[in-house]
Length: 146
Image (cartoon, rainbow, N blue to C red; front, side, top):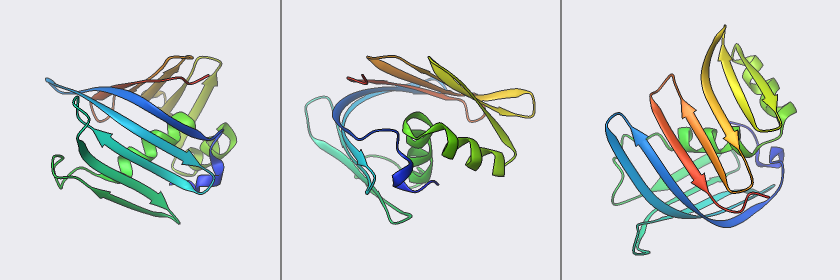
């Protein structure tokens, strides 16, 4: 995982998250605050009840939730966040060190393993969609991403 100072710009906002994994669909809200010091997420159900807290500081991820399974790898959440919000040079280097290639356009990012696209990210002012072909999940973040 990359250090927090690699973020493109600070984030402090509510987001709506729609996710699918296999045949299951999920919907939740989150308050996300991320800057050069770290990442903090508060996950909320549809009626605003706290269902989880994630923090990434000093290279350490902590995640607690009475709802999500203990097997959920919080490092994946942080990595996906970084793929969406961190700066291209830092991502390109980190991915290259893992044998992966990053392709960047004005509207998104693609990560390749050899010639196969394993992750696609589409970004616009109101949403970010991440498709992980390798692990079989998709999620869309809705917010003010201007």
